[in-house]
Length: 66
Image 1 (spheres, one colour):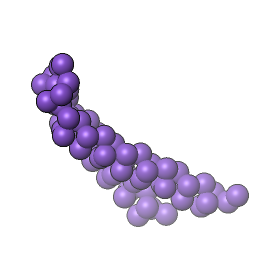
Image 2 (cartoon, rainbow, N blue to C red):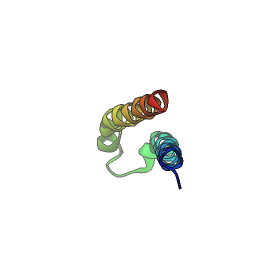
Image 3 (tube, helix red, strand yellow):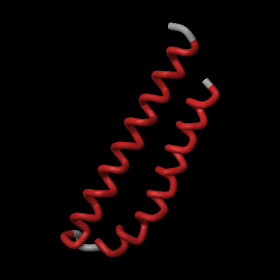
Image 4 (cartoon, one colour):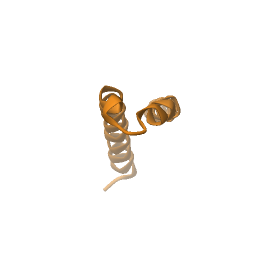
């Protein structure tokens, strides 16, 4: 496999991770009221969202350099 194929595979995997974290955030938001410590979990979501958006920016940077 060529280096570019490896990079494409990495980008695809990272994008899958980004989309999965988006889904996780949505599920947590929708169900936090059912959790014993739901408020604490919701308070952590902005940090998770920040890192997930940072991941998306880095994926874009990787693609623009390819």
